[in-house]
Amino acid sequence: MDRFIVALLAALGALAVIRFLKTRRGVRQETDREEQIRQELKELRRKREEE
Image (cartoon, rainbow, N blue to C red; front, side):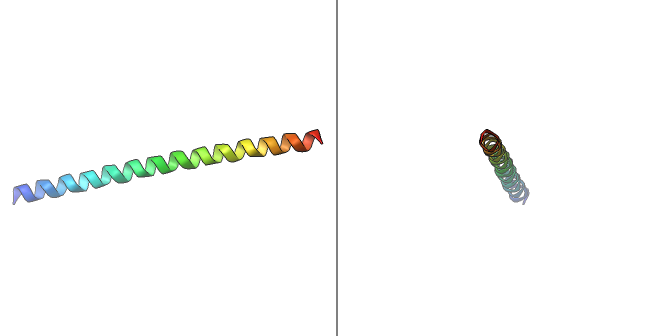
């Protein structure tokens, strides 16, 4: 019975770590996308000012 509980806790811990890593990667990708949009907006504003 104790082994079962330890195995269950280990599995839950592994799932928590996987979920945490996926969330962190998703946040980083979102941040990168926001930065890309900011750069594109800066370029568009610069082009508009030149015209």
